[in-house]
Image (cartoon, rainbow, N blue to C red; front, side):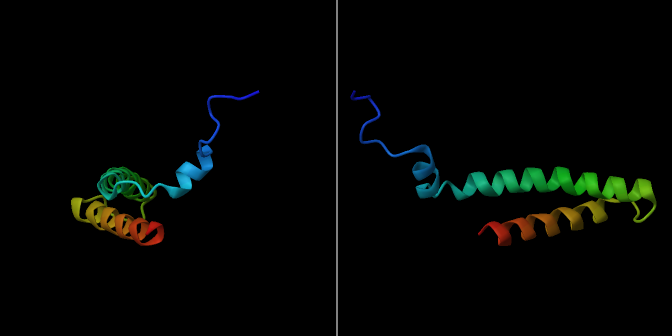
Length: 73
């Protein structure tokens, strides 16, 4: 029986061959790093380890962003 998917690549082949758009990666990385960085600093402030401040959150966000960028690229 011949299906309409004959000759098409599988889903995994498509995902592995896709390069994606770097702008989407950078945007998602920035948004998720900001949210996670804020959460980490908030939790550490709640536990009394660090002071909750804009500078502390910014440092955490930049560190997470760069770490994720280096690991994924």
